[in-house]
Length: 164
Image (cartoon, rainbow, N blue to C red; front, side):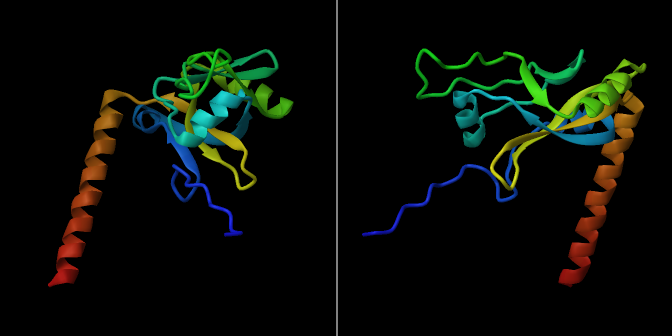
């Protein structure tokens, strides 16, 4: 009777709430950086439910701040008139030196900033991993698929050999 009920969490054990698998297919990631994200209350509730979409979103460095653009945070089901806008720009939190470094990399030809995954830190904060990326050509994408298929077939052969 005196015990408290534990909340059921809708995310995986490692705390990852959303991933951008398309970015890993379309871009070659050169470096990664963990940043915080400024969210409204209803957005945090949607994030914890695991309803965020990062496909098609990107990060823009403007002045001394970073912005997450085109990320889809659907409306909170139990929100009222203070519910958030689904595609509004969201400010990313990073140190000034990191922002200036990312802005310099973004201004280089062919480099872009893409969100890779949204997750909970051990302290319960929502964090975003962004990557400095270069677009892959069609040939590179085919090579990646070919390598992945070869690795998968090798794993199958090893598994079949160990079963015999």
